[in-house]
Length: 162
View (spheres, rainbow, N blue to C red):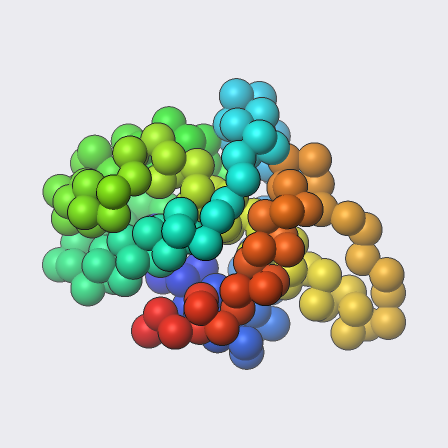
Protein backbone atom coordinates (compact mmCIF):
# COMPACT_ATOMS: atom_id res chain seq x y z
CA UNK A 1 0.00 0.00 0.00
CA UNK A 2 1.08 3.52 -0.55
CA UNK A 3 3.74 4.58 1.94
CA UNK A 4 2.50 8.15 1.53
CA UNK A 5 -1.01 7.14 2.60
CA UNK A 6 0.25 5.30 5.69
CA UNK A 7 2.41 8.25 6.68
CA UNK A 8 -0.47 10.65 6.11
CA UNK A 9 -2.83 8.57 8.20
CA UNK A 10 -0.37 8.29 11.08
CA UNK A 11 0.55 11.90 11.61
CA UNK A 12 -1.35 15.12 12.21
CA UNK A 13 0.98 17.05 9.98
CA UNK A 14 0.76 14.29 7.41
CA UNK A 15 -2.93 14.81 6.88
CA UNK A 16 -2.31 18.39 5.79
CA UNK A 17 0.91 17.54 3.93
CA UNK A 18 -0.61 14.60 2.10
CA UNK A 19 -3.55 16.57 0.75
CA UNK A 20 -1.87 17.60 -2.48
CA UNK A 21 -1.16 14.02 -3.45
CA UNK A 22 -4.62 12.82 -2.54
CA UNK A 23 -6.35 15.65 -4.35
CA UNK A 24 -4.82 14.42 -7.59
CA UNK A 25 -7.53 11.77 -7.40
CA UNK A 26 -10.71 13.81 -7.41
CA UNK A 27 -14.04 12.38 -6.22
CA UNK A 28 -15.08 12.04 -9.86
CA UNK A 29 -12.15 9.65 -10.31
CA UNK A 30 -13.62 7.34 -7.68
CA UNK A 31 -15.82 6.02 -10.46
CA UNK A 32 -12.69 4.41 -11.91
CA UNK A 33 -13.11 1.91 -9.08
CA UNK A 34 -16.30 0.61 -10.65
CA UNK A 35 -19.86 0.42 -9.36
CA UNK A 36 -19.31 -2.84 -7.46
CA UNK A 37 -16.50 -1.38 -5.38
CA UNK A 38 -18.35 1.88 -4.76
CA UNK A 39 -21.44 -0.05 -3.64
CA UNK A 40 -19.35 -2.26 -1.33
CA UNK A 41 -17.59 0.77 0.17
CA UNK A 42 -20.90 2.51 0.76
CA UNK A 43 -22.17 -0.54 2.67
CA UNK A 44 -18.98 -1.27 4.63
CA UNK A 45 -18.75 -0.09 8.22
CA UNK A 46 -15.28 0.24 9.66
CA UNK A 47 -14.87 -0.84 13.26
CA UNK A 48 -11.99 -0.25 15.63
CA UNK A 49 -11.00 -3.95 15.37
CA UNK A 50 -11.00 -3.90 11.54
CA UNK A 51 -9.12 -0.59 11.49
CA UNK A 52 -6.53 -1.96 13.91
CA UNK A 53 -6.10 -5.08 11.77
CA UNK A 54 -5.56 -2.96 8.65
CA UNK A 55 -3.02 -0.79 10.48
CA UNK A 56 -1.22 -3.85 11.90
CA UNK A 57 -1.03 -5.42 8.44
CA UNK A 58 0.15 -2.11 7.01
CA UNK A 59 2.98 -1.88 9.52
CA UNK A 60 4.03 -5.44 8.70
CA UNK A 61 3.93 -4.67 4.97
CA UNK A 62 6.00 -1.51 5.45
CA UNK A 63 8.67 -3.58 7.21
CA UNK A 64 8.74 -6.23 4.47
CA UNK A 65 11.39 -6.52 1.76
CA UNK A 66 8.63 -5.93 -0.83
CA UNK A 67 7.46 -2.65 0.73
CA UNK A 68 8.70 -0.45 -2.11
CA UNK A 69 7.10 -2.60 -4.81
CA UNK A 70 3.82 -2.82 -2.88
CA UNK A 71 3.87 0.95 -2.37
CA UNK A 72 4.33 1.48 -6.10
CA UNK A 73 1.58 -1.03 -6.95
CA UNK A 74 -0.89 0.78 -4.68
CA UNK A 75 0.24 4.36 -5.30
CA UNK A 76 -3.17 5.30 -6.67
CA UNK A 77 -5.23 3.45 -4.09
CA UNK A 78 -8.27 5.71 -4.48
CA UNK A 79 -8.53 4.59 -8.10
CA UNK A 80 -8.30 0.88 -7.32
CA UNK A 81 -11.15 -1.58 -7.04
CA UNK A 82 -11.41 -4.12 -4.26
CA UNK A 83 -10.40 -6.80 -6.76
CA UNK A 84 -7.32 -4.81 -7.82
CA UNK A 85 -6.18 -4.49 -4.19
CA UNK A 86 -6.74 -8.22 -3.76
CA UNK A 87 -4.68 -8.91 -6.91
CA UNK A 88 -1.79 -6.85 -5.50
CA UNK A 89 -2.01 -8.87 -2.28
CA UNK A 90 -1.89 -12.10 -4.27
CA UNK A 91 1.16 -10.89 -6.19
CA UNK A 92 3.28 -10.10 -3.12
CA UNK A 93 3.79 -12.93 -0.62
CA UNK A 94 4.66 -10.58 2.26
CA UNK A 95 1.41 -8.66 1.78
CA UNK A 96 -0.56 -11.89 1.53
CA UNK A 97 1.03 -13.15 4.78
CA UNK A 98 0.39 -9.83 6.57
CA UNK A 99 -3.27 -9.93 5.60
CA UNK A 100 -3.61 -13.58 6.65
CA UNK A 101 -1.95 -12.76 9.98
CA UNK A 102 -4.42 -9.90 10.54
CA UNK A 103 -7.33 -12.31 10.63
CA UNK A 104 -9.12 -10.52 7.79
CA UNK A 105 -9.95 -12.19 4.51
CA UNK A 106 -8.28 -10.69 1.47
CA UNK A 107 -11.62 -9.16 0.41
CA UNK A 108 -12.37 -7.66 3.82
CA UNK A 109 -8.84 -6.29 4.08
CA UNK A 110 -9.16 -4.63 0.66
CA UNK A 111 -12.58 -3.24 1.53
CA UNK A 112 -11.48 -2.00 4.97
CA UNK A 113 -8.29 -0.49 3.51
CA UNK A 114 -10.21 1.37 0.81
CA UNK A 115 -12.83 2.50 3.34
CA UNK A 116 -10.09 3.79 5.63
CA UNK A 117 -8.33 5.47 2.70
CA UNK A 118 -11.46 7.30 1.57
CA UNK A 119 -12.39 8.35 5.12
CA UNK A 120 -8.86 9.68 5.63
CA UNK A 121 -8.95 11.47 2.32
CA UNK A 122 -12.27 13.11 3.18
CA UNK A 123 -10.90 14.26 6.56
CA UNK A 124 -7.88 15.80 4.83
CA UNK A 125 -10.13 17.65 2.39
CA UNK A 126 -12.38 18.75 5.24
CA UNK A 127 -9.39 20.05 7.20
CA UNK A 128 -8.08 21.95 4.19
CA UNK A 129 -11.45 23.56 3.41
CA UNK A 130 -12.06 24.45 7.05
CA UNK A 131 -8.61 26.03 7.18
CA UNK A 132 -9.59 28.16 4.20
CA UNK A 133 -12.73 29.30 6.03
CA UNK A 134 -15.05 27.20 3.84
CA UNK A 135 -17.76 24.80 4.93
CA UNK A 136 -16.90 21.36 3.59
CA UNK A 137 -19.59 19.32 1.90
CA UNK A 138 -20.37 15.95 3.39
CA UNK A 139 -18.44 12.91 2.24
CA UNK A 140 -19.24 11.32 -1.14
CA UNK A 141 -21.92 8.61 -1.15
CA UNK A 142 -19.34 5.78 -1.13
CA UNK A 143 -17.78 7.17 2.07
CA UNK A 144 -20.16 6.50 4.97
CA UNK A 145 -20.20 9.27 7.57
CA UNK A 146 -19.86 6.59 10.25
CA UNK A 147 -16.47 5.60 8.77
CA UNK A 148 -15.32 9.22 8.69
CA UNK A 149 -16.43 9.66 12.30
CA UNK A 150 -14.65 6.46 13.38
CA UNK A 151 -11.38 7.58 11.78
CA UNK A 152 -11.77 11.07 13.27
CA UNK A 153 -12.37 9.64 16.78
CA UNK A 154 -9.43 7.27 16.48
CA UNK A 155 -6.68 9.59 15.26
CA UNK A 156 -4.66 8.83 18.39
CA UNK A 157 -4.82 5.10 17.62
CA UNK A 158 -3.81 5.72 14.00
CA UNK A 159 -0.91 7.93 15.03
CA UNK A 160 0.54 5.17 17.22
CA UNK A 161 1.47 3.23 14.10
CA UNK A 162 5.07 4.14 13.15
